[in-house]
Image 1 (cartoon, protein in one colour):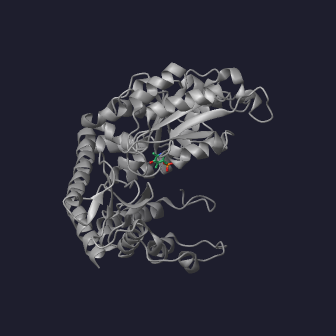
Image 2 (image 1 turned 120 degrees about the vertical axis):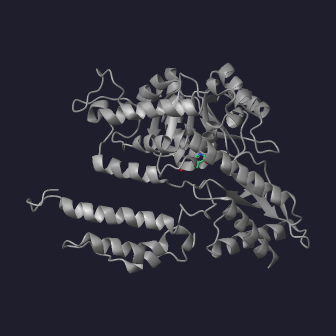
Image 3 (image 1 turned 90 degrees about the vertical axis):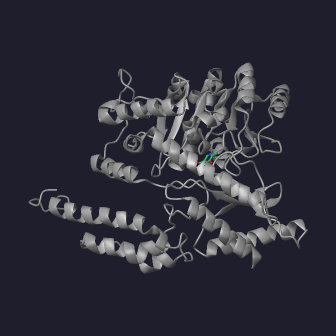
Length: 481
Ligand SMILES: *Cc1c(COP(=O)(O)O)cnc(C)c1O
């Protein structure tokens, strides 16, 4: 950042000045976030219309760029850090997480291999150990950080395929082979779309996924899974992977891992657990029932960016078979030979070579809040969700639509004067549109057995009891209108 070289980076003094300004800007933004509507009031194209459409040929001042943020970018921001954002699995950021991200850009280390940044690889290994500890996972669960759960599950399913080593798919591929039986992936009907995407990308095809029905609490039925495997084997199909979801996206239902893992172990089929959201709750001893039998699983994904105040993105993949994951992806080239290294080279376990230095985020967050601080926050969210579901249960105008085990409540309005199924659905659809249009609350929805369901998710760092009360009041008011 020398001032002397005309072709260098911005001058260090300017960086400091604007850097401080921007940190202040972010601090004030978060501090004042409640004065803003949680959802922007824009239509597609509104934001681009305000921006220069040609790249600037001449240099501009960074302060002009910063002032454009206020005027042109903010109007189209969905405020994920807003305490009234209660849609999806709300990944809020946190002060320590934001600062760690800044540091990560400052270093700009590419964590391909140990030697490309020893601290980054070793901190990542250390953080995997910390998560294993706080989630009470088995000692033999090795781990790696990817960007998202979709990518983690992609790698897990690639490892499951590699586990069938006799098929030599790594070498020969899957196309045009009459020695290869059709492979099967099993998942509940509530499994996340990312499992289907992995099947597409890995050459299984979507039809390779056999959807297993779930019970009245939206949990996969192990007996049906067992029958499906037997039937497929009789028909010449080859079971490759079973995906159990701990905390489904719609209702946070928990597939019975223990029973499913027994089937997997007996059949020697790779078991992948998708606990992208709910896995974070394993930090609480009282929630560890959800992981009963986990030691029998081959892989597990948890996203701290969904419920541990970690700025997007941060996904953890654990596996007790790292050698198989490595076999699926490691290659060496003359320009990059890691084959003789003693250290871990994470690029050998991943489709991508270059990797961000993400481990700084949990290192900052866990040290700053402490495990106890994280536990208290997550426990509070679950408490608030329970409280909300009790209000619904004691109301004649609403009903709870799924069990409440974590921070999500699925519910719907049941207006006294309407009995027709479709009309109740459209009433609820209109209700959520009305709610979200106010800018005072953001909810998401799902469909359960043909019913239009509203979904409230309490997982924001800034969401407190007063916000949940306010949400309930608004929902009541708008449903009466
Ligand atoms: C959110 C979610 C995913 C996808 O997570 P990304 O990190 O956005 O890819 C996968 N599985 C489940 C169960 C989820 O809830």
